[in-house]
Length: 625
Image 1 (cartoon, rainbow, N blue to C red):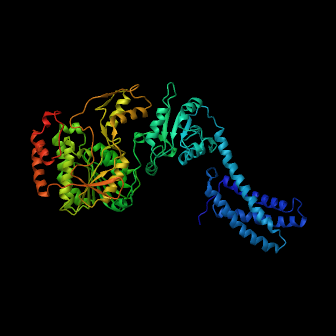
Image 2: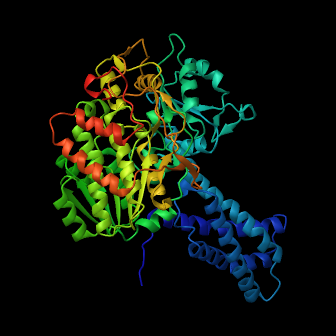
Image 3: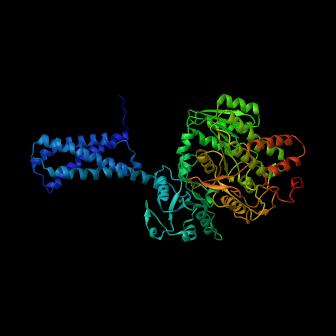
Protein backbone atom coordinates (compact mmCIF):
# COMPACT_ATOMS: atom_id res chain seq x y z
CA UNK A 1 0.00 0.00 0.00
CA UNK A 2 1.32 3.40 -0.95
CA UNK A 3 1.52 6.01 1.82
CA UNK A 4 2.07 9.74 1.41
CA UNK A 5 3.55 11.76 4.27
CA UNK A 6 1.67 14.92 5.15
CA UNK A 7 3.52 18.21 5.12
CA UNK A 8 4.01 20.50 8.09
CA UNK A 9 1.40 22.92 6.71
CA UNK A 10 -1.14 20.11 6.24
CA UNK A 11 -0.53 18.89 9.78
CA UNK A 12 -1.02 22.42 11.11
CA UNK A 13 -4.32 22.78 9.22
CA UNK A 14 -5.55 19.37 10.47
CA UNK A 15 -4.80 20.28 14.09
CA UNK A 16 -6.41 23.69 13.60
CA UNK A 17 -9.54 22.07 12.18
CA UNK A 18 -9.75 19.57 15.05
CA UNK A 19 -9.50 22.44 17.53
CA UNK A 20 -12.15 24.37 15.53
CA UNK A 21 -14.55 21.39 15.61
CA UNK A 22 -14.11 21.11 19.39
CA UNK A 23 -14.57 24.87 19.86
CA UNK A 24 -17.67 24.82 17.65
CA UNK A 25 -19.18 22.07 19.83
CA UNK A 26 -18.40 24.03 22.99
CA UNK A 27 -19.98 27.20 21.57
CA UNK A 28 -22.99 25.18 20.42
CA UNK A 29 -23.56 24.01 24.04
CA UNK A 30 -23.19 27.59 25.30
CA UNK A 31 -25.70 28.92 22.75
CA UNK A 32 -28.14 26.09 23.43
CA UNK A 33 -28.22 26.84 27.18
CA UNK A 34 -27.86 30.65 26.98
CA UNK A 35 -24.28 30.40 28.31
CA UNK A 36 -25.52 28.71 31.51
CA UNK A 37 -24.66 25.06 30.82
CA UNK A 38 -25.76 22.62 33.57
CA UNK A 39 -23.03 20.33 34.99
CA UNK A 40 -24.73 17.25 33.49
CA UNK A 41 -24.55 18.78 30.01
CA UNK A 42 -20.86 19.54 30.45
CA UNK A 43 -20.52 15.81 31.09
CA UNK A 44 -22.14 15.17 27.68
CA UNK A 45 -19.76 17.66 26.08
CA UNK A 46 -16.58 16.09 27.44
CA UNK A 47 -17.76 12.63 26.47
CA UNK A 48 -18.58 13.64 22.86
CA UNK A 49 -16.00 16.28 21.98
CA UNK A 50 -13.30 13.78 21.01
CA UNK A 51 -15.83 11.84 18.93
CA UNK A 52 -17.09 14.93 17.07
CA UNK A 53 -13.61 16.31 16.35
CA UNK A 54 -12.27 12.93 15.30
CA UNK A 55 -15.13 12.01 12.94
CA UNK A 56 -15.28 15.43 11.30
CA UNK A 57 -11.49 15.49 10.80
CA UNK A 58 -11.65 11.98 9.31
CA UNK A 59 -14.44 13.04 6.92
CA UNK A 60 -12.40 16.05 5.79
CA UNK A 61 -9.40 13.81 5.14
CA UNK A 62 -11.51 11.24 3.26
CA UNK A 63 -12.96 13.82 0.87
CA UNK A 64 -9.58 15.43 0.16
CA UNK A 65 -10.07 18.69 2.06
CA UNK A 66 -6.40 18.64 3.06
CA UNK A 67 -5.03 18.05 -0.43
CA UNK A 68 -5.97 21.49 -1.79
CA UNK A 69 -3.78 24.60 -1.82
CA UNK A 70 -5.91 27.13 -0.04
CA UNK A 71 -4.21 30.10 -1.57
CA UNK A 72 -5.98 28.90 -4.76
CA UNK A 73 -9.33 28.19 -3.08
CA UNK A 74 -12.44 28.06 -5.29
CA UNK A 75 -16.10 27.03 -5.18
CA UNK A 76 -15.09 23.39 -5.64
CA UNK A 77 -13.12 23.62 -2.38
CA UNK A 78 -16.15 25.08 -0.62
CA UNK A 79 -18.21 22.21 -2.00
CA UNK A 80 -15.67 19.77 -0.52
CA UNK A 81 -16.04 21.39 2.91
CA UNK A 82 -19.83 21.23 2.80
CA UNK A 83 -19.83 17.61 1.66
CA UNK A 84 -17.30 16.63 4.34
CA UNK A 85 -19.31 18.33 7.10
CA UNK A 86 -22.59 16.79 5.94
CA UNK A 87 -21.27 13.23 5.75
CA UNK A 88 -19.31 13.60 8.96
CA UNK A 89 -22.38 14.90 10.75
CA UNK A 90 -24.42 11.84 9.78
CA UNK A 91 -21.85 9.58 11.46
CA UNK A 92 -21.59 11.93 14.46
CA UNK A 93 -25.35 11.90 14.95
CA UNK A 94 -25.46 8.10 14.92
CA UNK A 95 -22.41 7.73 17.16
CA UNK A 96 -23.47 10.32 19.76
CA UNK A 97 -26.98 8.96 20.09
CA UNK A 98 -25.56 5.43 20.39
CA UNK A 99 -23.10 6.42 23.12
CA UNK A 100 -25.49 8.53 25.17
CA UNK A 101 -28.74 6.58 24.65
CA UNK A 102 -30.78 9.77 24.81
CA UNK A 103 -30.48 12.78 27.07
CA UNK A 104 -28.02 14.48 24.70
CA UNK A 105 -29.28 17.90 23.50
CA UNK A 106 -29.96 17.14 19.83
CA UNK A 107 -30.17 20.79 18.81
CA UNK A 108 -26.45 21.02 19.59
CA UNK A 109 -25.78 18.57 16.74
CA UNK A 110 -27.45 20.98 14.29
CA UNK A 111 -25.84 24.15 15.66
CA UNK A 112 -22.31 22.70 15.77
CA UNK A 113 -21.78 22.04 12.00
CA UNK A 114 -22.83 25.60 11.13
CA UNK A 115 -20.33 26.98 13.61
CA UNK A 116 -17.72 24.48 12.38
CA UNK A 117 -18.17 25.63 8.78
CA UNK A 118 -17.62 29.24 9.83
CA UNK A 119 -14.55 28.28 11.87
CA UNK A 120 -12.79 26.19 9.20
CA UNK A 121 -13.72 28.82 6.61
CA UNK A 122 -12.02 31.49 8.70
CA UNK A 123 -8.92 29.31 8.99
CA UNK A 124 -8.71 28.97 5.24
CA UNK A 125 -9.54 32.60 4.63
CA UNK A 126 -6.74 33.62 6.97
CA UNK A 127 -4.28 31.41 5.04
CA UNK A 128 -5.19 33.09 1.76
CA UNK A 129 -5.50 36.58 3.25
CA UNK A 130 -2.09 36.38 4.92
CA UNK A 131 -0.49 35.40 1.62
CA UNK A 132 -2.31 38.18 -0.27
CA UNK A 133 -1.28 40.67 2.43
CA UNK A 134 2.36 39.64 2.08
CA UNK A 135 2.15 40.13 -1.70
CA UNK A 136 0.31 43.45 -1.41
CA UNK A 137 2.75 44.74 1.19
CA UNK A 138 5.78 44.05 -1.05
CA UNK A 139 7.52 46.98 -2.71
CA UNK A 140 5.42 48.21 -5.66
CA UNK A 141 7.06 51.57 -6.25
CA UNK A 142 8.91 50.50 -9.38
CA UNK A 143 6.28 48.22 -10.88
CA UNK A 144 4.59 49.13 -14.20
CA UNK A 145 1.16 50.71 -13.76
CA UNK A 146 -1.45 48.57 -15.54
CA UNK A 147 -5.00 49.18 -16.77
CA UNK A 148 -7.25 46.37 -18.01
CA UNK A 149 -9.73 47.08 -20.81
CA UNK A 150 -12.61 44.66 -20.40
CA UNK A 151 -14.24 44.05 -17.01
CA UNK A 152 -15.49 40.59 -17.96
CA UNK A 153 -14.36 37.02 -17.43
CA UNK A 154 -11.04 37.54 -19.21
CA UNK A 155 -10.21 40.66 -17.20
CA UNK A 156 -11.18 38.99 -13.94
CA UNK A 157 -8.96 36.03 -14.78
CA UNK A 158 -5.95 38.31 -15.37
CA UNK A 159 -6.39 39.98 -11.98
CA UNK A 160 -6.88 36.65 -10.19
CA UNK A 161 -3.80 35.21 -11.86
CA UNK A 162 -1.64 38.22 -10.98
CA UNK A 163 -2.85 38.35 -7.39
CA UNK A 164 -1.88 34.72 -6.86
CA UNK A 165 1.74 35.20 -7.82
CA UNK A 166 4.40 35.24 -5.16
CA UNK A 167 6.05 38.26 -6.76
CA UNK A 168 4.01 41.03 -8.33
CA UNK A 169 4.89 41.95 -11.90
CA UNK A 170 2.48 44.91 -12.23
CA UNK A 171 0.55 47.33 -10.09
CA UNK A 172 -3.02 47.04 -11.39
CA UNK A 173 -4.82 50.40 -11.20
CA UNK A 174 -8.23 49.10 -12.26
CA UNK A 175 -10.52 48.32 -15.18
CA UNK A 176 -11.95 50.25 -18.11
CA UNK A 177 -15.11 48.98 -19.81
CA UNK A 178 -17.61 50.48 -22.24
CA UNK A 179 -20.55 48.94 -20.36
CA UNK A 180 -21.83 51.83 -18.23
CA UNK A 181 -23.68 49.41 -15.91
CA UNK A 182 -20.30 48.19 -14.62
CA UNK A 183 -18.86 51.62 -13.83
CA UNK A 184 -17.96 52.35 -10.18
CA UNK A 185 -18.21 48.67 -9.25
CA UNK A 186 -15.26 46.51 -8.17
CA UNK A 187 -13.66 43.21 -9.18
CA UNK A 188 -11.32 41.64 -6.61
CA UNK A 189 -11.16 45.02 -4.92
CA UNK A 190 -10.16 46.91 -8.08
CA UNK A 191 -12.42 49.70 -9.38
CA UNK A 192 -14.03 49.91 -12.84
CA UNK A 193 -13.02 53.47 -13.67
CA UNK A 194 -15.21 54.24 -16.69
CA UNK A 195 -15.25 53.74 -20.45
CA UNK A 196 -12.62 54.12 -23.13
CA UNK A 197 -13.10 57.91 -23.31
CA UNK A 198 -11.61 58.11 -19.82
CA UNK A 199 -8.30 56.62 -20.95
CA UNK A 200 -6.38 59.88 -21.60
CA UNK A 201 -7.38 61.21 -18.16
CA UNK A 202 -6.55 57.91 -16.40
CA UNK A 203 -3.20 57.60 -18.18
CA UNK A 204 -2.18 61.08 -17.03
CA UNK A 205 -3.52 60.70 -13.48
CA UNK A 206 -2.08 57.25 -12.71
CA UNK A 207 1.00 57.36 -14.96
CA UNK A 208 -0.17 54.23 -16.80
CA UNK A 209 2.57 52.18 -18.51
CA UNK A 210 0.59 49.28 -19.98
CA UNK A 211 -2.96 48.51 -21.11
CA UNK A 212 -4.17 44.93 -21.46
CA UNK A 213 -7.04 44.42 -23.91
CA UNK A 214 -8.94 41.54 -22.30
CA UNK A 215 -11.55 40.84 -25.00
CA UNK A 216 -11.74 38.34 -27.87
CA UNK A 217 -14.51 39.92 -29.95
CA UNK A 218 -13.60 42.55 -32.60
CA UNK A 219 -10.17 42.74 -31.03
CA UNK A 220 -8.39 44.32 -33.99
CA UNK A 221 -10.73 47.29 -34.31
CA UNK A 222 -10.87 47.88 -30.55
CA UNK A 223 -7.09 47.87 -30.17
CA UNK A 224 -6.62 50.35 -33.01
CA UNK A 225 -9.29 52.66 -31.56
CA UNK A 226 -7.67 52.52 -28.12
CA UNK A 227 -4.28 53.29 -29.63
CA UNK A 228 -5.71 56.36 -31.33
CA UNK A 229 -7.29 57.53 -28.06
CA UNK A 230 -3.96 57.24 -26.29
CA UNK A 231 -2.04 59.27 -28.89
CA UNK A 232 -2.80 62.68 -27.38
CA UNK A 233 0.00 65.27 -27.69
CA UNK A 234 2.55 64.92 -24.92
CA UNK A 235 0.96 61.71 -23.60
CA UNK A 236 3.04 58.86 -22.22
CA UNK A 237 3.92 56.06 -24.66
CA UNK A 238 1.71 53.13 -23.70
CA UNK A 239 2.61 49.46 -24.18
CA UNK A 240 -0.45 47.50 -25.29
CA UNK A 241 -0.87 43.83 -24.49
CA UNK A 242 -3.66 41.31 -24.93
CA UNK A 243 -4.75 37.81 -23.93
CA UNK A 244 -4.01 34.60 -25.83
CA UNK A 245 -6.80 33.28 -28.03
CA UNK A 246 -8.39 29.91 -27.27
CA UNK A 247 -6.34 28.34 -30.09
CA UNK A 248 -3.11 29.74 -28.64
CA UNK A 249 -3.97 28.48 -25.17
CA UNK A 250 -4.61 24.96 -26.46
CA UNK A 251 -1.45 25.05 -28.54
CA UNK A 252 0.73 26.42 -25.72
CA UNK A 253 3.81 28.51 -26.23
CA UNK A 254 5.91 31.21 -24.65
CA UNK A 255 4.28 33.70 -22.30
CA UNK A 256 1.10 31.67 -22.12
CA UNK A 257 1.68 31.07 -18.41
CA UNK A 258 1.56 34.81 -17.82
CA UNK A 259 -2.01 35.15 -19.09
CA UNK A 260 -1.08 38.17 -21.22
CA UNK A 261 1.26 38.67 -24.16
CA UNK A 262 2.55 41.37 -26.46
CA UNK A 263 0.43 42.41 -29.41
CA UNK A 264 1.00 40.67 -32.70
CA UNK A 265 0.02 41.75 -36.19
CA UNK A 266 -2.82 39.19 -36.26
CA UNK A 267 -4.44 41.02 -33.32
CA UNK A 268 -4.90 44.14 -35.45
CA UNK A 269 -6.42 42.48 -38.50
CA UNK A 270 -10.22 42.76 -38.95
CA UNK A 271 -10.77 39.00 -38.73
CA UNK A 272 -13.35 36.87 -36.99
CA UNK A 273 -12.41 33.67 -35.18
CA UNK A 274 -11.99 30.59 -37.35
CA UNK A 275 -13.98 27.56 -36.20
CA UNK A 276 -12.62 24.09 -36.91
CA UNK A 277 -13.98 20.64 -36.16
CA UNK A 278 -10.87 18.53 -35.90
CA UNK A 279 -12.67 15.29 -34.99
CA UNK A 280 -12.76 14.04 -38.62
CA UNK A 281 -9.12 15.09 -39.04
CA UNK A 282 -8.08 12.82 -36.17
CA UNK A 283 -9.81 9.89 -37.80
CA UNK A 284 -8.05 10.70 -41.06
CA UNK A 285 -4.51 10.95 -39.65
CA UNK A 286 -4.33 8.71 -36.59
CA UNK A 287 -2.20 5.65 -37.18
CA UNK A 288 -1.43 6.60 -40.81
CA UNK A 289 1.79 7.17 -42.72
CA UNK A 290 1.87 10.85 -43.77
CA UNK A 291 4.20 12.61 -46.21
CA UNK A 292 4.77 16.39 -46.07
CA UNK A 293 6.79 17.92 -48.91
CA UNK A 294 8.49 21.27 -48.37
CA UNK A 295 8.53 20.35 -44.67
CA UNK A 296 11.15 22.98 -43.84
CA UNK A 297 9.09 25.90 -45.15
CA UNK A 298 6.61 27.98 -43.18
CA UNK A 299 3.51 26.05 -44.26
CA UNK A 300 5.17 22.63 -44.40
CA UNK A 301 6.70 22.97 -40.93
CA UNK A 302 3.43 24.11 -39.35
CA UNK A 303 1.64 21.25 -41.14
CA UNK A 304 4.12 18.80 -39.63
CA UNK A 305 3.65 20.26 -36.15
CA UNK A 306 -0.13 20.02 -36.25
CA UNK A 307 -0.25 16.62 -37.97
CA UNK A 308 1.93 15.22 -35.18
CA UNK A 309 -0.81 16.18 -32.67
CA UNK A 310 -3.12 13.63 -34.30
CA UNK A 311 -0.79 10.68 -33.65
CA UNK A 312 0.16 9.41 -37.09
CA UNK A 313 2.15 6.19 -37.18
CA UNK A 314 4.83 7.78 -39.37
CA UNK A 315 5.56 11.36 -40.45
CA UNK A 316 7.83 11.75 -43.47
CA UNK A 317 9.49 15.16 -43.88
CA UNK A 318 10.71 15.79 -47.44
CA UNK A 319 12.78 18.93 -47.89
CA UNK A 320 15.69 19.90 -50.18
CA UNK A 321 16.97 22.76 -47.97
CA UNK A 322 19.12 20.84 -45.49
CA UNK A 323 19.30 23.52 -42.82
CA UNK A 324 15.53 24.00 -42.74
CA UNK A 325 15.05 20.21 -42.58
CA UNK A 326 17.55 19.94 -39.73
CA UNK A 327 15.68 22.46 -37.60
CA UNK A 328 12.16 21.11 -38.12
CA UNK A 329 13.38 17.56 -37.48
CA UNK A 330 15.16 18.72 -34.32
CA UNK A 331 12.03 20.53 -33.14
CA UNK A 332 9.72 17.57 -33.73
CA UNK A 333 12.19 15.18 -32.09
CA UNK A 334 11.63 17.06 -28.81
CA UNK A 335 7.88 16.30 -28.93
CA UNK A 336 6.84 13.27 -26.90
CA UNK A 337 5.06 11.02 -29.38
CA UNK A 338 4.94 7.43 -30.55
CA UNK A 339 5.06 8.54 -34.19
CA UNK A 340 8.17 7.87 -36.25
CA UNK A 341 9.43 11.19 -37.66
CA UNK A 342 11.75 10.61 -40.59
CA UNK A 343 13.62 13.51 -42.27
CA UNK A 344 14.24 12.92 -45.97
CA UNK A 345 16.73 15.24 -47.67
CA UNK A 346 15.92 15.51 -51.34
CA UNK A 347 14.05 17.16 -54.19
CA UNK A 348 10.39 16.44 -54.86
CA UNK A 349 11.32 16.42 -58.55
CA UNK A 350 13.64 13.40 -58.16
CA UNK A 351 11.71 10.40 -59.58
CA UNK A 352 14.07 7.78 -58.07
CA UNK A 353 13.80 9.32 -54.60
CA UNK A 354 10.00 9.44 -54.81
CA UNK A 355 9.75 5.86 -56.03
CA UNK A 356 11.94 4.58 -53.20
CA UNK A 357 10.14 6.69 -50.64
CA UNK A 358 6.66 5.48 -51.62
CA UNK A 359 7.74 1.85 -52.01
CA UNK A 360 9.44 1.82 -48.59
CA UNK A 361 7.11 3.92 -46.45
CA UNK A 362 3.79 3.66 -48.32
CA UNK A 363 2.33 7.04 -47.27
CA UNK A 364 -1.46 7.05 -47.00
CA UNK A 365 -1.69 10.85 -47.19
CA UNK A 366 0.43 13.36 -49.08
CA UNK A 367 0.53 17.06 -48.20
CA UNK A 368 2.32 18.84 -51.04
CA UNK A 369 3.65 22.16 -49.70
CA UNK A 370 6.89 22.33 -51.71
CA UNK A 371 6.74 25.28 -54.13
CA UNK A 372 8.47 28.36 -55.47
CA UNK A 373 6.33 31.23 -54.23
CA UNK A 374 8.15 34.55 -54.75
CA UNK A 375 6.41 36.35 -57.61
CA UNK A 376 9.15 38.74 -58.86
CA UNK A 377 11.82 36.03 -58.56
CA UNK A 378 9.81 33.58 -60.66
CA UNK A 379 9.21 36.24 -63.34
CA UNK A 380 12.91 36.08 -64.15
CA UNK A 381 13.11 32.29 -63.62
CA UNK A 382 9.99 30.89 -65.33
CA UNK A 383 11.59 27.51 -66.00
CA UNK A 384 12.07 26.91 -62.28
CA UNK A 385 8.50 27.99 -61.49
CA UNK A 386 7.03 25.56 -64.04
CA UNK A 387 9.33 22.69 -63.07
CA UNK A 388 8.72 22.96 -59.34
CA UNK A 389 5.11 24.12 -59.15
CA UNK A 390 3.65 22.22 -62.12
CA UNK A 391 5.83 19.37 -63.37
CA UNK A 392 7.00 18.18 -59.96
CA UNK A 393 3.40 18.27 -58.75
CA UNK A 394 2.45 15.98 -61.65
CA UNK A 395 5.36 13.63 -60.89
CA UNK A 396 4.49 13.42 -57.20
CA UNK A 397 0.78 12.91 -57.94
CA UNK A 398 1.36 10.07 -60.40
CA UNK A 399 3.74 8.38 -57.96
CA UNK A 400 1.06 8.65 -55.25
CA UNK A 401 -1.49 7.05 -57.61
CA UNK A 402 0.81 4.13 -58.50
CA UNK A 403 1.40 3.35 -54.84
CA UNK A 404 -2.22 3.66 -53.75
CA UNK A 405 -2.10 6.79 -51.59
CA UNK A 406 -5.51 7.58 -50.15
CA UNK A 407 -5.44 11.39 -50.38
CA UNK A 408 -3.26 14.04 -51.95
CA UNK A 409 -3.55 17.64 -50.73
CA UNK A 410 -2.06 20.36 -52.94
CA UNK A 411 -1.47 23.77 -51.42
CA UNK A 412 -2.27 26.42 -54.01
CA UNK A 413 -2.62 30.20 -53.80
CA UNK A 414 -5.03 33.02 -54.50
CA UNK A 415 -2.51 34.12 -57.15
CA UNK A 416 -3.67 31.14 -59.25
CA UNK A 417 -7.01 32.88 -59.85
CA UNK A 418 -6.76 34.82 -63.14
CA UNK A 419 -2.97 34.81 -62.75
CA UNK A 420 -0.85 37.74 -63.85
CA UNK A 421 2.46 36.10 -62.90
CA UNK A 422 4.42 33.03 -63.87
CA UNK A 423 4.19 31.84 -60.27
CA UNK A 424 0.39 32.13 -60.25
CA UNK A 425 0.08 30.46 -63.67
CA UNK A 426 2.34 27.57 -62.62
CA UNK A 427 0.25 27.00 -59.49
CA UNK A 428 -2.94 27.15 -61.56
CA UNK A 429 -1.49 24.49 -63.84
CA UNK A 430 -0.80 22.38 -60.76
CA UNK A 431 -4.52 22.62 -59.87
CA UNK A 432 -5.42 21.56 -63.42
CA UNK A 433 -3.13 18.53 -63.25
CA UNK A 434 -4.79 17.25 -60.10
CA UNK A 435 -8.26 17.93 -61.47
CA UNK A 436 -7.44 15.85 -64.54
CA UNK A 437 -5.90 12.99 -62.52
CA UNK A 438 -8.84 12.81 -60.11
CA UNK A 439 -11.14 11.53 -62.83
CA UNK A 440 -9.32 8.22 -63.28
CA UNK A 441 -7.49 7.53 -59.99
CA UNK A 442 -8.47 5.98 -56.67
CA UNK A 443 -6.43 8.63 -54.89
CA UNK A 444 -8.54 11.62 -53.82
CA UNK A 445 -6.89 14.79 -55.12
CA UNK A 446 -7.71 18.01 -53.28
CA UNK A 447 -6.37 21.53 -53.76
CA UNK A 448 -6.59 24.37 -51.23
CA UNK A 449 -6.26 28.06 -52.09
CA UNK A 450 -5.44 30.78 -49.61
CA UNK A 451 -3.62 34.08 -49.50
CA UNK A 452 -0.75 35.55 -47.50
CA UNK A 453 0.28 33.79 -44.30
CA UNK A 454 1.50 36.08 -41.54
CA UNK A 455 5.15 35.59 -40.72
CA UNK A 456 5.94 33.24 -43.61
CA UNK A 457 9.54 33.29 -44.76
CA UNK A 458 10.32 36.04 -47.26
CA UNK A 459 6.91 37.66 -46.84
CA UNK A 460 6.29 41.39 -47.01
CA UNK A 461 5.60 41.34 -43.26
CA UNK A 462 9.11 40.18 -42.46
CA UNK A 463 10.57 42.71 -44.88
CA UNK A 464 8.58 45.49 -43.20
CA UNK A 465 9.89 44.40 -39.80
CA UNK A 466 13.47 44.53 -41.06
CA UNK A 467 12.90 48.00 -42.51
CA UNK A 468 11.42 49.23 -39.20
CA UNK A 469 14.38 47.77 -37.28
CA UNK A 470 16.70 49.70 -39.61
CA UNK A 471 14.83 52.96 -39.02
CA UNK A 472 12.82 52.91 -42.25
CA UNK A 473 11.56 53.75 -44.67
CA UNK A 474 8.97 51.03 -45.33
CA UNK A 475 8.52 50.37 -49.05
CA UNK A 476 4.97 49.64 -50.26
CA UNK A 477 4.24 49.10 -53.93
CA UNK A 478 0.94 51.00 -54.15
CA UNK A 479 -1.37 52.78 -51.63
CA UNK A 480 -4.42 50.83 -52.86
CA UNK A 481 -2.90 47.34 -53.02
CA UNK A 482 -4.86 44.81 -50.96
CA UNK A 483 -4.14 41.26 -49.86
CA UNK A 484 -5.83 38.47 -47.91
CA UNK A 485 -4.09 37.53 -44.66
CA UNK A 486 -4.41 34.74 -42.13
CA UNK A 487 -2.23 33.18 -39.43
CA UNK A 488 -0.21 30.02 -39.92
CA UNK A 489 -2.31 28.13 -37.41
CA UNK A 490 -5.60 29.15 -39.02
CA UNK A 491 -4.35 28.18 -42.47
CA UNK A 492 -3.13 24.75 -41.39
CA UNK A 493 -6.24 23.90 -39.37
CA UNK A 494 -8.43 24.73 -42.34
CA UNK A 495 -6.13 22.77 -44.68
CA UNK A 496 -6.51 19.70 -42.48
CA UNK A 497 -10.27 20.26 -42.30
CA UNK A 498 -10.49 20.53 -46.08
CA UNK A 499 -8.50 17.32 -46.47
CA UNK A 500 -11.08 15.49 -44.38
CA UNK A 501 -13.99 17.07 -46.30
CA UNK A 502 -12.67 16.38 -49.80
CA UNK A 503 -14.31 13.74 -51.98
CA UNK A 504 -11.75 14.24 -54.77
CA UNK A 505 -11.41 16.79 -57.54
CA UNK A 506 -12.33 19.87 -55.52
CA UNK A 507 -10.41 23.07 -55.15
CA UNK A 508 -11.17 24.35 -51.67
CA UNK A 509 -11.03 28.05 -50.94
CA UNK A 510 -10.43 29.15 -47.37
CA UNK A 511 -12.37 32.06 -45.95
CA UNK A 512 -9.69 34.72 -45.61
CA UNK A 513 -11.97 37.40 -44.23
CA UNK A 514 -11.93 40.82 -45.84
CA UNK A 515 -8.90 41.91 -47.91
CA UNK A 516 -6.63 44.34 -46.10
CA UNK A 517 -4.69 47.23 -47.60
CA UNK A 518 -0.98 46.52 -47.44
CA UNK A 519 -0.32 50.09 -46.32
CA UNK A 520 -2.56 49.46 -43.27
CA UNK A 521 -0.48 46.39 -42.44
CA UNK A 522 2.66 48.54 -42.64
CA UNK A 523 1.13 51.18 -40.36
CA UNK A 524 0.05 48.55 -37.85
CA UNK A 525 3.56 47.10 -37.71
CA UNK A 526 4.95 50.55 -37.01
CA UNK A 527 2.43 51.02 -34.20
CA UNK A 528 3.32 47.62 -32.73
CA UNK A 529 6.93 48.76 -32.61
CA UNK A 530 5.90 51.68 -30.41
CA UNK A 531 6.50 54.21 -33.19
CA UNK A 532 4.32 56.60 -35.17
CA UNK A 533 3.75 56.11 -38.93
CA UNK A 534 5.16 58.94 -41.05
CA UNK A 535 6.55 60.65 -37.96
CA UNK A 536 9.08 58.02 -36.82
CA UNK A 537 9.01 55.69 -39.84
CA UNK A 538 8.31 56.92 -43.36
CA UNK A 539 6.30 54.93 -45.92
CA UNK A 540 7.32 55.27 -49.57
CA UNK A 541 5.65 53.84 -52.68
CA UNK A 542 7.73 51.99 -55.27
CA UNK A 543 5.15 50.90 -57.87
CA UNK A 544 3.95 47.43 -58.85
CA UNK A 545 6.63 44.86 -59.58
CA UNK A 546 6.48 42.48 -62.55
CA UNK A 547 3.67 39.95 -62.17
CA UNK A 548 2.04 41.61 -59.15
CA UNK A 549 -1.71 42.22 -58.97
CA UNK A 550 -3.37 45.15 -57.28
CA UNK A 551 -6.13 42.92 -55.86
CA UNK A 552 -6.18 39.18 -55.27
CA UNK A 553 -9.19 36.94 -55.94
CA UNK A 554 -10.32 33.60 -54.54
CA UNK A 555 -12.60 32.31 -57.36
CA UNK A 556 -12.44 32.21 -61.16
CA UNK A 557 -15.40 33.08 -63.35
CA UNK A 558 -15.70 29.48 -64.51
CA UNK A 559 -15.62 27.98 -61.01
CA UNK A 560 -18.80 26.32 -59.78
CA UNK A 561 -19.05 27.20 -56.08
CA UNK A 562 -20.31 24.53 -53.69
CA UNK A 563 -21.19 24.62 -50.01
CA UNK A 564 -19.10 22.28 -47.85
CA UNK A 565 -21.10 22.61 -44.64
CA UNK A 566 -18.16 24.46 -43.05
CA UNK A 567 -18.53 28.25 -42.65
CA UNK A 568 -14.88 28.96 -43.47
CA UNK A 569 -14.32 26.54 -46.36
CA UNK A 570 -15.84 26.75 -49.83
CA UNK A 571 -15.38 24.41 -52.79
CA UNK A 572 -14.91 25.21 -56.46
CA UNK A 573 -15.08 22.85 -59.43
CA UNK A 574 -13.97 23.72 -62.94
CA UNK A 575 -13.95 21.82 -66.21
CA UNK A 576 -10.45 21.19 -67.53
CA UNK A 577 -8.67 19.19 -70.25
CA UNK A 578 -8.67 15.41 -69.99
CA UNK A 579 -5.71 13.44 -68.63
CA UNK A 580 -4.21 12.43 -71.99
CA UNK A 581 -3.98 16.02 -73.20
CA UNK A 582 -2.47 17.19 -69.92
CA UNK A 583 0.19 14.46 -70.06
CA UNK A 584 1.17 15.38 -73.62
CA UNK A 585 1.33 19.07 -72.77
CA UNK A 586 3.32 18.47 -69.62
CA UNK A 587 5.85 16.44 -71.59
CA UNK A 588 6.19 19.39 -73.96
CA UNK A 589 6.57 21.79 -71.01
CA UNK A 590 9.39 19.64 -69.65
CA UNK A 591 11.21 19.89 -72.98
CA UNK A 592 10.75 23.65 -73.09
CA UNK A 593 12.08 24.05 -69.53
CA UNK A 594 15.35 22.53 -70.71
CA UNK A 595 15.81 25.29 -73.29
CA UNK A 596 17.63 28.52 -72.50
CA UNK A 597 14.92 30.62 -74.15
CA UNK A 598 11.89 31.29 -71.94
CA UNK A 599 9.66 32.65 -74.75
CA UNK A 600 8.43 29.23 -76.04
CA UNK A 601 7.79 28.10 -72.48
CA UNK A 602 5.71 31.17 -71.71
CA UNK A 603 3.81 30.76 -74.97
CA UNK A 604 2.88 27.21 -73.95
CA UNK A 605 1.88 28.43 -70.51
CA UNK A 606 -0.40 31.01 -72.12
CA UNK A 607 -1.97 28.21 -74.14
CA UNK A 608 -2.55 25.84 -71.21
CA UNK A 609 -3.79 28.47 -68.76
CA UNK A 610 -6.14 30.71 -70.78
CA UNK A 611 -6.86 32.93 -67.78
CA UNK A 612 -3.15 33.84 -67.52
CA UNK A 613 -2.89 37.50 -68.55
CA UNK A 614 0.40 39.12 -67.66
CA UNK A 615 0.31 42.89 -67.06
CA UNK A 616 1.15 44.58 -70.32
CA UNK A 617 4.36 46.57 -70.61
CA UNK A 618 6.04 45.33 -67.45
CA UNK A 619 8.40 42.89 -69.10
CA UNK A 620 9.07 42.54 -72.75
CA UNK A 621 10.23 38.98 -72.26
CA UNK A 622 6.89 38.06 -70.77
CA UNK A 623 4.63 39.80 -73.29
CA UNK A 624 1.98 37.62 -74.87
CA UNK A 625 3.34 36.00 -78.07
